[in-house]
Amino acid sequence: MTTPPGTLPVDDSAVHTVREIAQQPALWREVDRIVGASREALDAFLDPLVARGDLRVVLTGAGTSAFAGQVLQPSLARHLGRRVDAVPTTDLVADPRGCLAEDLPTLLVSFARSGDSPESVAATALADQVLSEVHHLVITCNEQGRLAREHTRRPRSHVLLMPAASNDRGFAMTSSFTCMTLAALLALGKDARDGVAERLARAAESIIEDGAADRTAGALVDRAPERIVFLGSGPLKGLAEESALKVLELTGGTLMAVAESSLGFRHGPKAVLNERSVAVVYVSNDPYTGRYDHDIVAELRGNLPVGSVVAVSAESGAGTEGADAWPLPGLGDVEDAALALPAVVYAQLIALRASQARGLRPDNPFPSGEVNRVVQGVTLHSLND
Image (cartoon, rainbow, N blue to C red):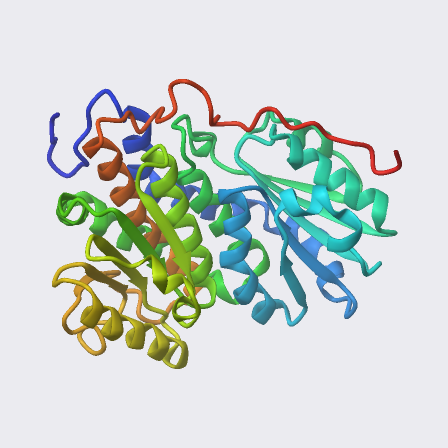
């Protein structure tokens, strides 16, 4: 394994994964340029819809793409002053009449890395079938994917393509997740546009480039945890879900990873803790919400050995005493949906190092193919049969 200056350590088991984690700051700047260049067309498509008081916005995707919707939902609801729901495609395809029970004018925002997963296209088709009026914003990393091809030039659809490099070649979604999340925030959250992408990129560069975060993640993994818990509130609960999935994916399911809200954790899920557990708490930038995150940090500090509790925070000092504090520099005033993007880099690094510590190949942690990069084996059934 080599460690070039200013980069993450890499070996041939993780060429794609390491590159795709490290490229995120540059790609976020590119996403900012893409959305800016598309601004006129985006506004022409979105503004008449958002002006409608009865509009429902549904954020959908599968797996990591669904967690993009969970991160965005609270923030976009505030930005738009409209009903916004995060509904995974896996739920929508299995129960379209339940997920879309109200026949309201709907903007379906579809997130998809490849756009070739069976549920991706099926979800948009079922929405068209169940609802009287659906408009589609497709955010995808693959211009050649079926989802992009089917919605290009449709009158009620707008396809927003991410940088080609964000179509991750590694097994797990990393830069695809952050690029699509940022694109939706810039496209729909008008109050979040000015300069935020550059600030997020600089923060992520500070996390990645000096190697300190990678060493810190490695030290956490060196504790040989049996279980890892990710906690967060509001948009950061979706981040916790994505973080746990990254660990499960890249370790081939050999490291138990659990996600919950900071308040919800006490209501049963706390039973997962043992003396070989570690916990990562994402601290909200909202002063009110963040109090609950600080409370659980303090509580876990009393439950787990010293060094087993990490607080990922844009704050400095208050509320994180006794815990390892992993910084998000210069972001103390950004909303939590944006804060999630550099914060997830820490989880990506934990998952990467945990995978390698187990002798796995992060680029392909399931060499026998029981879990696939693009989901296979789904039989789609006709709604009317």
